[in-house]
Length: 220
Ligand code: C5P
Image (cartoon, rainbow, N blue to C red; front, top):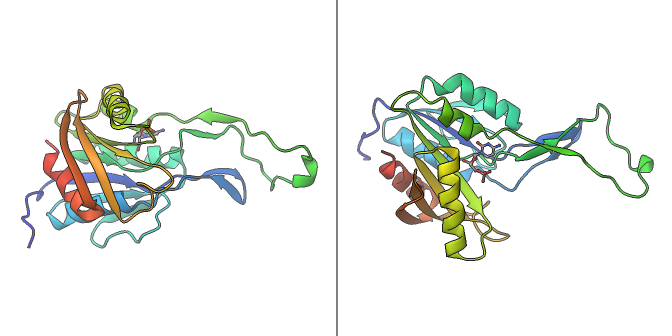
């Protein structure tokens, strides 16, 4: 039996990949499976926390015993997190949120015959949700961010992670290398946990549930 060391804690977790519509039948998405975020929800619940899972597109089922709110786009994930942030003492932002979305969504399906030479899409930036949440955080609230990077080597990865931890104002940043074969969609994960200033706190590798438990162990 797990220790109930998170009893009394209220943990808000986002997971999965957002999908930004282009037209009524198409979207821009990403390869996040939601597995690591779902494992965090499962791990926190099994240790006694009350968990709210804000779920974008998941390729795995949401765990039992947690409150699940389904969302699709970056805008929806932001609205849901803002609505729930104040009632949770810990926010873990594991979702892969679109950094860009189509500036306009076509009312009708985009037709290929109207664009013989190809098609250009105009994209706009989405707001950085976690940076906004950490700016307005309640006293004592802990905020954990993720960073999935395709860095060429470990020094580059750590430098990107440290800069990101500081820029986003998070208490912890969970850094992992992703690529065509790593990170997204896999059963296992290997992460480096950085503190708010970018200093390395832990390295964890294993199945996503054990990684989840170790991440929960280092949250202050
Ligand atoms: O900047 P980058 O997208 O690499 O940051 C990743 C972290 O920021 C993740 O925790 C992700 O959930 C969060 N994020 C966000 N809003 C965005 C993009 C990413 O909160 N628009």
